[in-house]
Amino acid sequence: RKASGYYSPLSGTVFGYHAASAGSYEPDCASHCSSGDYMGLRENMEEEEGIWMKEIKISLPPYKMICALFFILILAIVRGISSVNEIGLTIDTYVTLLALVLCADTCYQEIPGGGWEILAIKPGKQQRLTILKRFAVQYVFLIGTAAAGYGLFYLIQQPYIRENELYHFVTAMAATAASIVLFGALPVLISKITGSLWGGIGAAAALWFFLISSGALKLPLFLQIFAFGGMEMGDGDLRWIYGKITALVLGAVCIGAVGNFGRHFGKKRMKGKR
Picture 1 (spheres, rainbow, N blue to C red):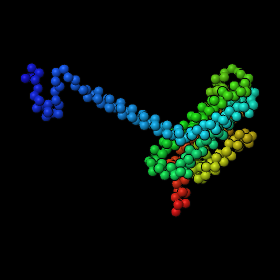
Picture 2 (picture 1 turned 60 degrees about the vertical axis):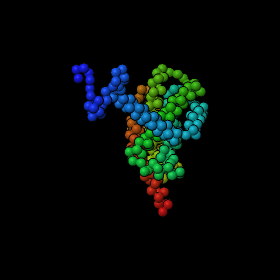
Picture 3 (picture 1 turned 45 degrees about the vertical axis):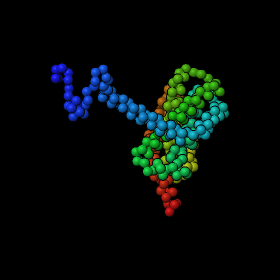
Picture 4 (picture 1 turned 120 degrees about the vertical axis):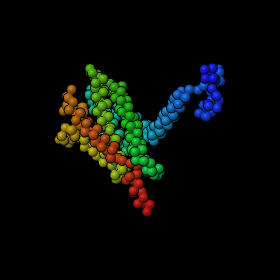
């Protein structure tokens, strides 16, 4: 019987398999599994995309974007420059001030409405991941704003154009990004420790004012965060990188120290309820 291609229906039933009739299509198990994996991957990607969109809406409400673009436009109109080198210095200095104001409420924005209570019950790893996503969204936006401001200075101020313009632009964006990392995270950490949003902004702004003043020139080179584009450094002098490395390290420490939602705020609110 096996030689003639005949199989007993009973044997197929016992083993959970029914032989396909002639001319019929028998589904491929491997293909079905691959399709299921693809659907699962697609659902995960859509879910992750939805999470990112949610964080973008929370981290970058319309009023923040409008204020940032208005600020950079006014800066390009009011701040006079004479050469390309001054554009990078100006962008690095003032976009950093914008960063400390816009990023200060990264964790604080849930406090007034009690949203921190929902986030606080989630695992610590998930809370930290949420914080990192919010920082990433705001940092990308601020760097994009800095690039737009660089172009606005070209259009409005029409400075003297020199060679290696791409080099000046890239170094300006790199220097600005390092400053944003530090001054975007510092007010968030101070706000969580003190429980005061304006306290975090004020303390970070005081440090910013000192670092852009002439008094900062007395500090060691690795503490001069805004040495980029300074008069003391000529073209090709890369010693400003030491200060930017310090900014990146301190910024990473501040982001890591922010910790979980509600660790400081939550305790104070609970004491107030009691």
